[in-house]
Image 1 (spheres, rainbow, N blue to C red):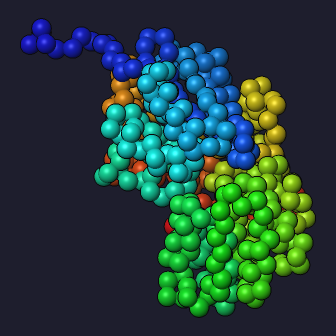
Image 2: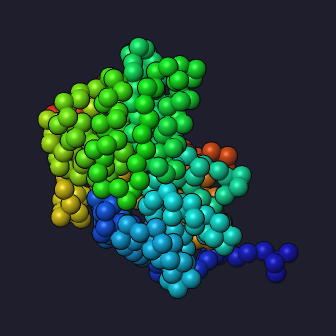
Image 3: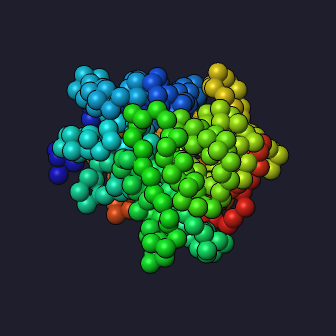
Length: 386
């Protein structure tokens, strides 16, 4: 028995881990048409720099290898293969984009490489039965749309709804959630749905069709530059419906400023994070810690960009998982720890926790609603779930 029992304090490593470091791979759109979201990857790199300056994770420095997809799906796939096969990372963390991560799921699951906290709201990343090595992070687009639909039913039951969405899996997820929330009223309340392609530079025709439908409520399920364009164009064409915007497009500096802040006034979106710009949380220790981190480790980033908060939250969660691994830095143990979370994250609003189980791969499940007042987002609901 003594001959086969593991020694006390024995360490176990898979590729990407050692006594000195933990290699983590990430692919983000640092350039290209989705470059605004590159701020997330940069924020994560800045967070791990802070971790390293404080001694690392259980004495090991994080080697965060960040690659630029240039906003091209093919590049994301190829760069991920390089991270796994050449750089020998322990895991893939926080890579962005639904289509690329869907394409990579079979590859990473076959190799049993954790694909954790994907920066996409696609609900299919919660599928432990078929893809146990793949997990999202934020509340899904479907859940978010369910929350918007329920709000409309309760507060504007006679609404005439127009929907604009990307012709991709994220967009279709949002539409499905809206239909789910409205139930048998969907066919009468939704008067027009329009989709757009990523390669289409203008939304003028789609927005004109939506306005002509007579809709007084607009589910603007767009992302990135398309959100900016839709906000601006809707206002300029003198169409002023009650407008909803996805959480992924709420960044004031990245998406609302370019549209014109007065043109975004009254828009409703969802919130998971504490406000860091106004006075409401000025005395909050966790908000102050975030602001101090921004000043020291991410000084070139725009303080008004919510993408920095997202990267901070995701990296904090990843750090917690790796701390829980202790000296057993195997891919199997990383997955085990990631699927057994029950923790508070400092920048999350009260009532919102990070929690997972082997059968529930949705780390964040709750949201609040908030409205843009022309200067900042103002929370106005209790905590909600889809």
